[in-house]
Length: 451
Ligand SMILES: [Zn+2]
Image (cartoon, rainbow, N blue to C red):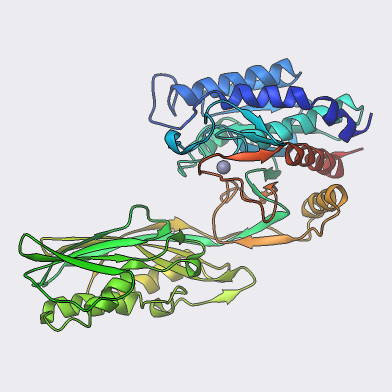
């Protein structure tokens, strides 16, 4: 039987497997007993391993950090497919369907995790099964690895997996988009601050997460000050003081040019207010010096670089000023021709040059895989064969599940230009996308390991 035909015949099985996983609200939490990421992540792993066993795989539970399903358990796996079973939380009232129940409507499946990443995990599992059932022979084992804590970003599941098992030499993750991601920028997050000598500015607060362009910030100025209105900025009096609310436009930290930073807009506005004292002015000017309004490429930090992986981006994303004490955070993504040490050095110099202290800096180096390797070529060929679309390697500013796995690439399964509401309300996946992805994965496995 042909792979596609087999997959179509088993579509109802694939859907019922997926609905079993969607039913479990597997949001990763703190350890509960034997479950390092909480009871629900434990339950979802048990359920997945049960499904895989029912479908003929040899399974292993790695102390609830991760699990594995092997197609041919003899010998080391030559190819690993890495997906995850945990999901992000939901705002239930914003969903039009129950988030933890799979709903099918007009060719789409809805439910938390159907695209990120339970659906792709099962598309890969059914691809493996199709190969076996259709009678193809492989040169070695393929291992499906199911992590239980991708969404927290700690990579604890992967680290613990690597303590117990070997990561295969070739790994792809179906936890991103097609065609293929081979390059990911490096990332740094830094916290800076210190005492300020502000007099008029009593407090400033804004930003909720470090990896997004802030779309709102509030400042409180001492006394009643009459201000000239400006678009997106409102002010009012409260308890004898002046409150300024400044709005911008949110965007992901990897694509800050798509947003407008509310903080830098506020500082630009504040710097024109006559009533400010020398200490107030020093603060606004210093912050604008580090993060000029409208600039997103870290030129002010002397780190504006552009290469094949894109250009540096930097976002001032969290601020908290109270009682003369400033704490602020920023997120930076840097291209492959820079490294962590060089960026950290420049950031430190710029922050100190502006009169602040660098309190903390963490991050990861860029990730890059040879675009001409046989492995990469086999993946691209499978994509082109099944979809008839051009296959190419991409560079992104975000980090995928394989960011710290040497040689790892991200391969689907979101279709380019399609918005599956990943992490949002009404997350969905096209039934046909699921089938096509499974077919691509099967062809890719055959391209890499087929005899
Ligand atoms: Zn994911």
